[in-house]
Image (tube, rainbow over all chains, first blue to last red; front, side):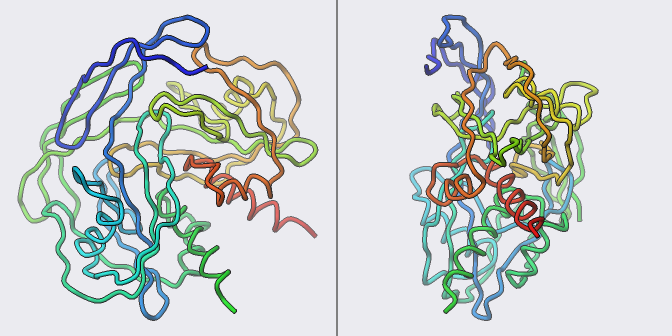
Length: 179
Length: 179
């Protein structure tokens, strides 16, 4: 029942986006085209500070022309493993080295048009190093208690999908681990 | 502190994807480019059947080359309101007319590269009509209890971001409304 690729073509290759247009044949024999984005994959981290707060960040997102409150995240570099990427992004975006880091799950942000896999990690035992943001990132740290962060989902203050999913996982894990 | 657009260019316009490459100036005065996808917005529906089950669907997603279990969803057509789109997608994808429909929230699936807004609706009082899928959609209905569906998030059987977020909202609403 799968769609079979007849021909695949790169229609735009930028520094961020790799856009494809494929000719496919459907299970019923009809032909069509599929447009999609080829993505290297990404990570999203839940950084738990020593006092239990979750270290959220706030940054401007050009695609939506708004400031967004998010968990630290970033794209995999070529040949990079998700766990290495998670540690790198934590250091670059919030200036912490994670002594403990644990893979939680993988999900797809937008199955309709991109093959991006988002790998979610829980990070703890954080040691302050220095913030080392990319030149096009201007990031503010927004530490919140887990309860505050969850409340911000339902009040509409947190609208970023990976952040919502990360916080819900954090709530399940950190609540269940209480004695 | 916002990034200012100096020039915007459409680098690919397909039947699905509208890809842009903009020249921008950062708050610190440096110039760079931003690649992003211009998206019309979308809806995602939580269809609650008369017996309380959530009507999930299973379909092949070409971008990730896998079958995916999802909530019914779809893109806004030109000039279409989110609520009209939600009703249309419910009828097209699962063959039900929703007599009751309620807007819950809006979130961004992937703020890093697309301006897509995902509008989430709770749909009830469903009346069977007929399934009327798009010619490139082959959809199987997968009704599950809410508890089963939530469990499928944490077991890794549900990996689609909008579906995870929709089910978590359903859990909060439908659990809180119990006496």
